[in-house]
Length: 329
Image (cartoon, rainbow, N blue to C red):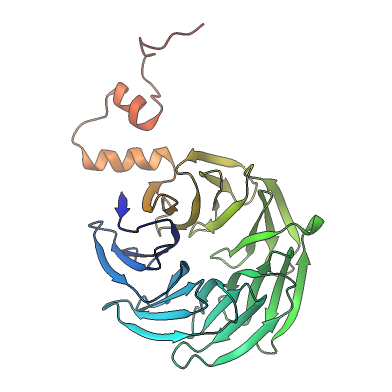
C-alpha cells in the first residue's frame, strides 16, 4: 500500500493503537491523517511554518502531537483535525515528541539540549531536564511513568527520575558515538540506540548496560523502531535500506532497498507490517517478511501463485523447477 499526498519528504509516521489510521508529518509543514483500510487521506492539518519532524498519537488515539523546526509543539483533535493548542517548550528547533502512556503529559526534545515535560492543555512546563551537552533527540517513557529515557548527539543516554527531575543513571557510548535516535522496547526491558556511524546498541533498560552492539548501515541511521512483541527492530537511514534484526542476537533477518532515504518507521500491531516515511514524499506499508506477504496474497486470490509469478513478485520460487531463462556457469 502506498500513501501519496505530501509535497516533499515525509519525516515522521505513527500508527494509531487501533491499527486503523496513521499520522504523518513532513517537510511541507503539514500533518496528515490516513485511513489504513482505504488508503485515503482523511485530514490535512496546517499551521506549522517549518518542517514537521515528529508526530505521535495520544494513548487513546483522540489527539495528535506534532513537533516542528518552527520551535512549536501543536496539539490536534484527531477526529476533526482542529488545532487545540500551540506550545513553545524550547528556545530552538524541536526534535522529538512523546506522550506519557497513562497521563496526558508530553515530553519533547530539542536542539537546545533540554527535555521538557509539559501539560498539553495549558502548555505549562512541569519539568525541565538538563544535562546533555549537545542536542537531545530520542525520548521514551517507562510504562509506569516513573522514568524517562533520553539520548543526545553527545553520545550519552540518560535515565531520568521524573519524581525528582534528576538523572538516575547514565551511559556514555564507547568513543562518544553520536546518537541519532532511541527507542524503548514495548515490554520495557531494552533500549535500542542508533548512531551517526551506522551502529546499533541494545541496552538493558534497568541498568543501561550494553547487551549487544552491531554495525547495521554504512551511512548514518536515522531511525529505529521495535516490533510490538519486542522480538525485532527495524533500522533505516541515509542509505535507503530497511533492515530487520532479531533483537536478542543482532541477526539480520531482512534487508531491502526501499527509497533514497528513510527517515521514520512504525510497526503495525500484527508485527508483520511497517509504515515507512520516504524521502520521495510517500508513505509505504511494507510486509516485513516474504512469508507474511505470501500468506496475505493467498487470502486475496483464488489460486496459487505460478512459479514465474513467485520469482517476479516475491524474488524466490521454492519448490519450483529452475527457470529456463536462468543460465548458470
